[in-house]
Image (cartoon, rainbow, N blue to C red; front, side, top):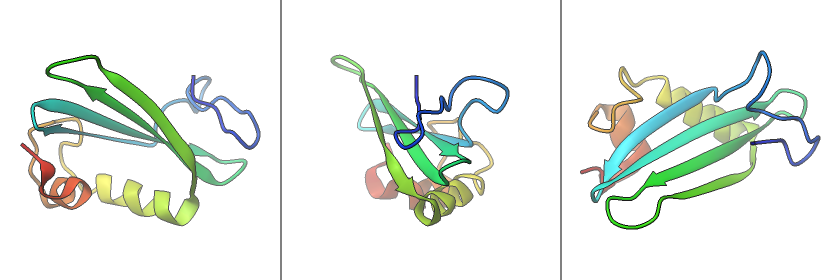
Length: 103
């Protein structure tokens, strides 16, 4: 469960649940899935990082709280992508978000 560390509100349950943006990429054989969650009460973001490893155990971490301005910029960039759920997408938004690390 992902919840706001400021107010304790669950961000992945209920009517407004789920990430506000998600992007996937293939990097060195692993699949990275980054999901951005927003707490409307506290005006902060949380980043859920999931790494599906080609060789080894998968990993999961949550970062945050992240300032609204930084989160807004990342979410806006992801929304420029025509296929954010495709780990094979090489659009300008994917290249800017992940840099030169894409497979």
